[in-house]
Amino acid sequence: MYVDETHIRSYQILRTTWSEVGQQKQVPTYGHHAHVSLFGAVNVLNGETILHRVAAANATTFLDFLRILKSHYPDKLMVLVLDNARIHHAKMVKEFLRQEEESFHLIFLPPYSPQLNPIERLWKWIKETVIANVFHKDQIDIDRAIARFMEYIDQQPEEVLRRLGCAA
Image (cartoon, rainbow, N blue to C red; front, side, top):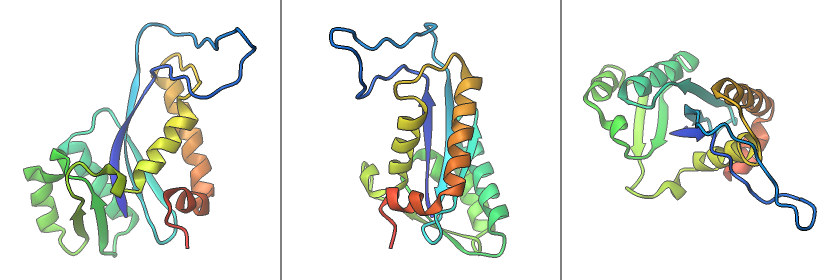
């Protein structure tokens, strides 16, 4: 499984869009920024995606995410490919992994190489879908958009694998 975390911010991002000649696309704003943090894992065998919304990405919430993964695959050895973020090496995480060594094997990517983790393509896709050219009035609105995206990808595992470059 490819694992990572991301932050989806309500910054009003204009991407390629259509507008009338001489009329710049306007995106309203309230002058404040909401954000949502997510942990994610993609199973490269079947395209199943597990996303977990958190208030902040830290060692404690990463540990919670590992427990969620274990509950999804209780009797499996999970090989997780992830970056070298500090939260992945925290003492509490190492202690948990020592106790759960039959459930997890972690493979760390080289430093400063996000392009080697295909889940980065999922983050790009979700941000293009959820925040590009869209106005979200608050965090609840962002949560709803993320929930719609999650429902969609749950029904489209083959598209997830294709977009991540993992399709056979």
